[in-house]
Length: 167
Image (cartoon, rainbow, N blue to C red):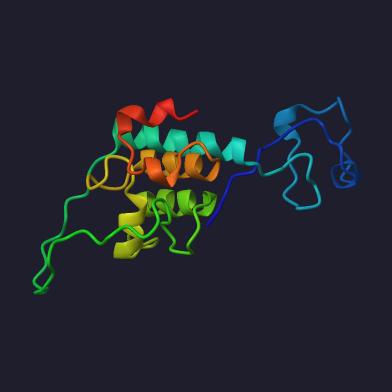
């Protein structure tokens, strides 16, 4: 899992960044970043700053994304072809709760399905926007809206055309 920090800011409220020699008001915001947990005023992590990341990932997927072509396989499998029953909508990592970590898991899965694989159950749980059509960035947005209390489990699955109505 991972998140992005809020990035550089010229506020410099903590002792760590001031101790690094930065002077408040003299350095452009773009140059006020220190990679340390103690420098909280210049690299704070917050949900409202990571929600735009999920939106951008969804936009990029919708605009420029391509569906990967499945590689032919010679392994015979015996599956029913049925989708697993959803245990908890949005619970991509199957920890029995819906949090931002599920949205991150979805975004990671979208970016690299081999490295960040989801189980069949995790995929079924994560595919809550236009259920059955595959996991997209919209699913990550919906998961964040579930975590924020804007979408209820009883509202799931959600149609993509109605996703923006949950505010």
